[in-house]
Image 1 (tube, one colour):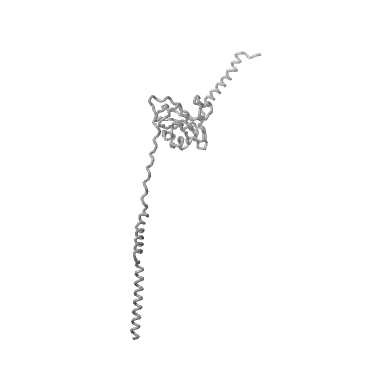
Image 2 (cartoon, one colour):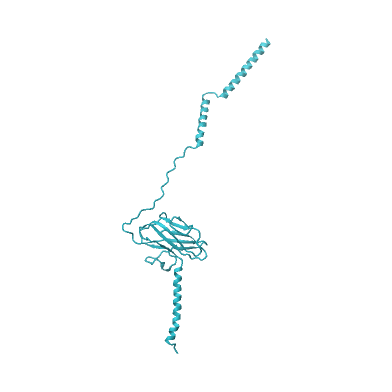
Amino acid sequence: MFPSPVRLRAVRRPALVTAATAAALLLAVAPAAAHVHVESDNARALAQDVTLTFAAASESADAGITQLRVVLPEGIEPTDVTYGEGPKGWKLTATDDGYTVRGPAVEAGEDVEYSVVVRQLPDVEELAFKTLQSYSDGRIDRWIELTEPGGDGHGHGHGNEAPVLELEDAAPGAASVGPSPTAPESAPAPSPAPAAEETAASPPARAASADTEAEDGGLSAAAWAGTAAVVLVVAAAVAFLLRRGAARQ
């Protein structure tokens, strides 16, 4: 005996409700996966002084985010970037290929949002900002994968995509402002003045030279004193001999 159509509908209805509930839960959980996003209200090629806002979702319930290390895309130099706003106590430090924003760990499970100001965006269609996200327990999330050409910006499910900012075409008349100004080269240091000890040594050197010249030109004082002593001795001896001879006569 086969079940009636009414009974079949009664059996199928709970199964459909259960499947729909499960699908809804999966959809609700999917967007909660950790990621880093970047956005701007002036995402246009060659735009100047553009504020970029980054949002990094936490993927740890036990440790707080302490640092975000960003590799800048081609066309933006570390000197083009200045810090905007971020978590309390966080600061920006330029690196060879980008920058790092870091500071005291935020609460475990708390997301981080910060902003930077870029001097000028390059004339390209999109910009990818590879990011390393560090936690207080040493964990590092690497958001460095690039989307495939013609992709939808979500990396086709790879799960570790770098944040990408799509740019509109440059405004009419917009032009590159050129490379960032660099600090002027330091002027060559002046030649050092003669050392004090060298200056002080000069007079003794000249005095020694004068002594040498005096010795070359005649007898020294000691020589003259010795000669006088000899003369006195001889004179005394002569006087003694004369007195002795007179006494014998």
